[in-house]
Length: 167
Image (tube, rainbow, N blue to C red; front, side, top):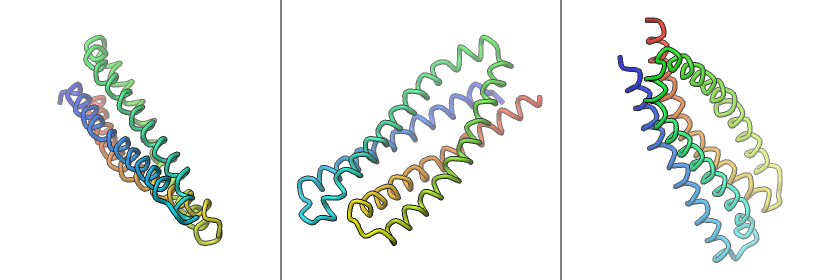
């Protein structure tokens, strides 16, 4: 198995996946603009700031991940040719760290935050709190969907790295 090809394929798949953060972020920004321009009720007006914040965060996340992975993709061949065993070892450490972060943040903290937001919707009567909680739920669902597939990809890549290290 060519580990450089596996690393490159993983990074290219990430480059395809991360722009979805930006696309959803732009959708939230358009929604914010729509609520600002067309919102007549107090509840509709309450969505302006939360959707603006969520959209901005998703765009920043998407752009950050995109450019990080793009530079990583460019550096893979050089790092691999310089010292292949060290490349595998560093990538293995990075993927294991990332998988732990996914487990802790994406698959533990985000569901807890989703539950808290759902409780806010049920228990709080203020439009801004409800709009914020609903927007947070929408944004976190987007993050779960995108990061769920990213987690599966990096887990597969990690398995490939482990099989190379064993050899």
